[in-house]
Length: 145
Image 1 (cartoon, rainbow, N blue to C red):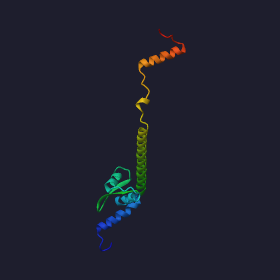
Image 2 (image 1 turned 90 degrees about the vertical axis):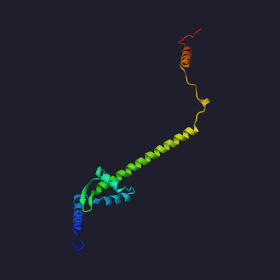
Image 3 (image 1 turned 30 degrees about the vertical axis):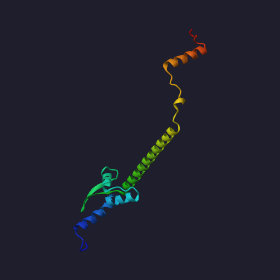
């Protein structure tokens, strides 16, 4: 051990060297860097939540600087892909909803019906007359005097 190294440096080095062998090789800081590089940066707190809720396969390990999350690289990459996919779907849905809303507004603006163009709403009496008139025209009913 170098003269300036203390026991905590030794523990840190030992813990770090053991992590790759068990698969949990990425620290929370490294996870954050991968998220930033992917263009979807997240706060340290949000990354810890992703580890805690299982979105990222991770274990909380005690280090000399306190407990911290270490994750598998495969799970971090999978989480990044899933989040990017979810965000793309949400953006597409939002854009689609905007297009529908805009199209609907345009249609309403361009096709406001004129009150005079609307046909009258049939009433029961007018329906009866229409049916009666049709029956008379077909010969299945005699006109009333």
